[in-house]
Image (cartoon, rainbow, N blue to C red; front, top):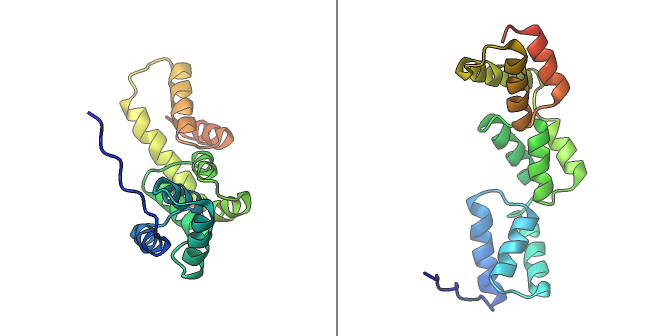
Amino acid sequence: MDQPKPPKITDEKVALTKAEAFCAYQERSQHEVRNKLYEWGLWTDAVENIIIQLIGNNFLSEERFTKAYVTGKFKQKSWGKIKIKQGLKLKKVPDGLIKKALQTIDGDEYLDTLNRLLSKKATSLTEKDPYKRRYKLQQYAFSRGYEIDIINDILKTSEL
């Protein structure tokens, strides 16, 4: 069944109000907001005008979005730095902001989180061969976005 297309917004003031509500709900990247505005059927000039106004009125901040994204993905989903960086690149966040936001992750907390993830995964593995077990743990941690050297260091020092 085809869903009806949402009505297009032609008035820039209506679009600005709607975009403000969109940004107030949660932190957004400029890329997300720009895509939403184009989805609403606005022209390029209107979209760029609205983006400028949203930044000026502090509804949209790429730096604030990046910090919130990094904190949320690390603390809520236990993602590693590689996966977080990939997610931010998909949202077209500049590399400088990504690097700055990733530095806010505490190193000890990062290692503790990885250790906890590996311990939890190790209890669910039924593999008896130590090499295969270690490989599965490596792959799991790597898929969560952790760096391979840190994974190997933790697997060497722990009895997983």
